[in-house]
Image (tube, rainbow, N blue to C red; front, side, top):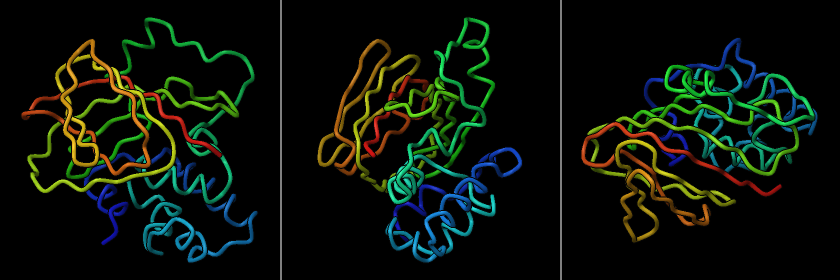
Length: 205
């Protein structure tokens, strides 16, 4: 099974009313691509594309980034419900809701990851900032995935570990790491603890 598919296994929250799946279908058809064509461009299998479009698979960042690259759009184009051209402002009350709101959730051997977008609705952006909560999976056989772009992580609560190529880094609260995403990597809970961190993902188009 491809690595991208592994990232999508397990529990997850489907995007409300399958808006994400509908957007993928609409963009794919606008490019006159079949599901198999898109799967080939993303180097994944037909079942993954069909499952995402039907809302039957919990989406995760790595395959979505590859889909956006194949379709020539930004990640925010798939994930956002509304668009506006002003600043995306998150106040303190909204930030307190971050631990209870999940705009994207996936499970893999990295653990259960819940994403909250901090820039939803901002069109044509070059960066995607998230608050991510990760709980451990207990798995020891980790699978690394690479994709185009860059990532910056800042530890907030608990500790996470980043396996990056042949290196392993532990990120504690107040510490940060910046890396090229093309190198196979995985971000996961460290030593069985739940953690929360800020992630800013840049994906070129």
